[in-house]
Amino acid sequence: MEGPRVKAKWLEDRFSNPLPVDAPEGLVQKYAQFYIVEMLGGTLFMDKFGERISIRYLQFFDPISNGKKYSWGSAALSWLYRHLCNASEKTAKQIGGALLLVQLWAWARFPHICPVMRHPHQALPLGPLAIRWKGAKITTEHSMHVLRAYCVSLTSLRPNQIVWEPYRNYLGSLPAYCTAGQHIWRSIVPLIHFWVVEGHHPERVLRQFGMKQGIPVDVDTSIELHKITLQGKHHQDWVEVYAPHIAKWVAHDIIADAPPFHGEMSYNDEYMVWFRPRTVRHITKETSYWDTLVESQLSILAKCEPGSKIYTNSINALQVVEEIGRLTLDHAREVGNTSEPAVGRGRQAGGRQRHRGRQSSQRHTSSRPSTFGQRHTPVPTSSRRPTSS
Image (cartoon, rainbow, N blue to C red; front, top):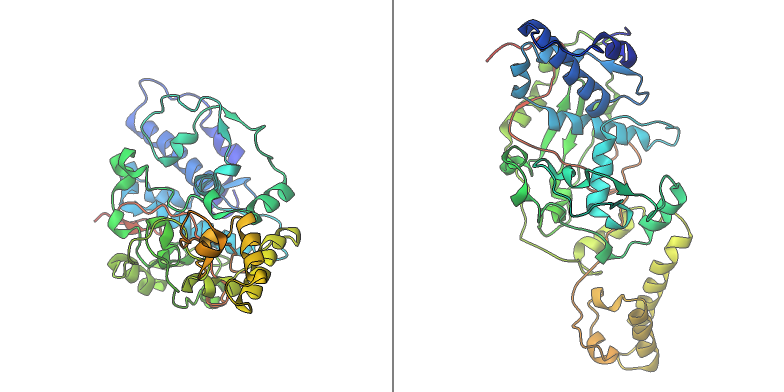
């Protein structure tokens, strides 16, 4: 044992024997606690080493029924967000947190990197959204575990290759426990996991909710909160320390809202104009060529008279690279002789906050996995045993 953590192998060995059919209630409770702690410490709240499992969660499952009083999904997001933040440091070599959520988040939005199911029409059991990837997969269709292939693939994405509303067609088929509490999915609240406090800001990723994305207000990620660690604070009463944050969580006063919006945003939409200079748009030099071509043609168009030869040539160039549809250019339909109107569509490039504590107006964070469920007590904010309510 090391502090509140134990070696995963040691814990597995302790419960390696099958549970007897006539096992007493106390033994059943112990086995159930082992399973839950292994799942929480080894998956949702995994550290960056993966060799040890925290047992601090045991205090919230005595008896087992106590566990349902807490919002484990929001705590898992808080833990994951902190690890994603730490992993963005240049010196970082490892990452912890519920990385399975990140993988499922990517598969739901970027079908071109999603594995092909070997039996796509198999009957699936009722379960959460990720159940659709249950079963044998064909991995030869996509490059797997090749960083450069992923970099090139992600930075050369076209708007129609992205699923902007990944939950829209599935909510009706999910079990009730997955869709309960939808009224707080867009809550702007702090997410709390013991000493970790991270902000939940759905107002910055409204498109996944089928809403128009506007220019978001600045968000201070708080350098002071990011400096807090558990070192030397194993007996700290986080309920008392984080009382103001817990109060905001309990209230759920602010719900992000915006007009409905579906499809792709115009290149010159006010949000896209704000977004482009504030994000990292290209990972490699090669993948910047496409945008360089488009922007150079736009610059030429701005200096030419509509109908001139140079103007027409630029329009034709944009048509060739299939960009004309999302640029909302004046006279584009007439000059380009296309049967389709110049509808507003757009590309969204992603970039994470590189520096902890910097205001997010400097870099806009890409949408992060959201697993809000029913309204519960924020998980676990104290190392003390919870009292019954």
